[in-house]
Image (cartoon, rainbow, N blue to C red; front, top):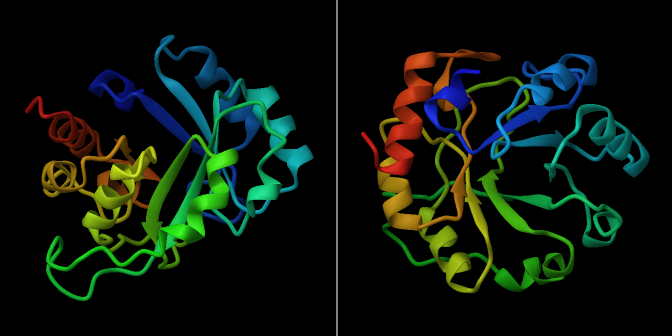
Length: 202
């Protein structure tokens, strides 16, 4: 519960099989039961059938769902819990913040009806748990200016998250490998520093 003690507002549980951070409902349910009332448990899924997602959510007491695969807007309309849809972007070609936003935002418009937030992540493969290169933060700022709730992910660390927040002004930030000692094992010091930097409370 290090992340909770550090001040995290949500915890993500990855239900994607054959990944370093895969967890089962049997392991997650007792953790969720002990969470404080204002910490949101989020389930992460990747092209799973709706029936499976709903069963896991009910078994664990999840309060939000994050979809990381190729789910279409019509695939996400039948859930009663808030939906977060991951959008995968290519990394920038130069210095972060150094070029105009290029994202074709019209592509995301169909998600308006089903997604409570968009999570912007790297298009690089993540299943092996390697560190990720940051995406262009000004894309997040542009989308936020269009009244999207943007969760910024990809390549965030305790060293750069403060600058990312200042540049992108996202609704929230998401981190995984950036606070790990190794894939699947968090580094408590990095977790504490990340949350402090993200919230500006260092």
